[in-house]
Image 1: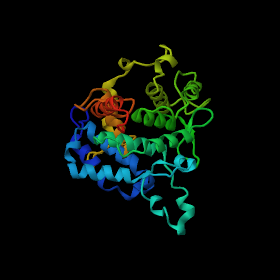
Image 2 (image 1 turned 90 degrees about the horizontal axis):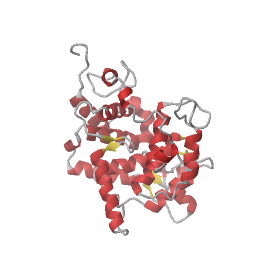
Image 3 (image 1 turned 60 degrees about the vertical axis):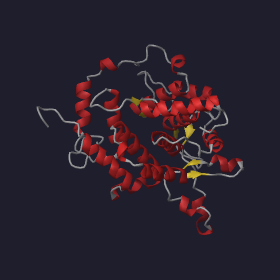
Image 4 (image 1 turned 180 degrees about the vertical axis):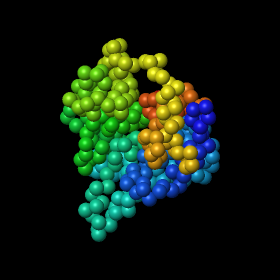
Length: 322
């Protein structure tokens, strides 16, 4: 710390994300079924830090193959397709096909957040998504939408709120297929979640929250409904109202000077989620020579350009898988 300012510990954060790709501390055991999300935070964080170049071709391909190994490949049965998508880890997958754990294997369903983070990770790694079972993924997304327009996270039942709505929109945008979403009811759910503060909660009559507001606005953008749904009196395009210097210093005050990584609060343990979101926020503020981030899909603009090229290839030749 010099002159009262915190330095940005770029090299330590690169090492932190690299460790996340290899091993996690025992305190992270609760993330065992969410390894896909941890992978995404590490990859996208390294991308913004311009640290992906440290992954050689063999290591990239190993990660890509691991991601595809967690894709659930269903049969033609409609119920089976509804359980498709991507898993978050290998725990439940190891029970598939074993009569000794049939009760557990029935819980082996795709998760909408893990499907989004799997697809985002593949894009970041430069994959062409040719091995994605698109019809099954679309059936998975469609099966999770509730009558009020919100989404569950998995076929087995869960909370239904704005987080999973965002994941559904991101999946459909990446695959350029919105047939799985009833966009009218989804948009209505978002607008009905707006509170008197001019921001959104996780659902109707719930307290407004920064995270749910982000998910709501990003969903409207990905669905192409932002301009037609929100008036100009929302607090959008108001970055100039922020004290970006103070905001940056708060983010940097959560850095761990030894291990790298950022925490939710100062003097707390860092984790992949807050490390990535902190660095992504600094990118939005155009600080610390980070790659520009696309705030809607939460990937670098460079990765987004790769995705848009895939979309162009599809439009030129519809038989080419995205």
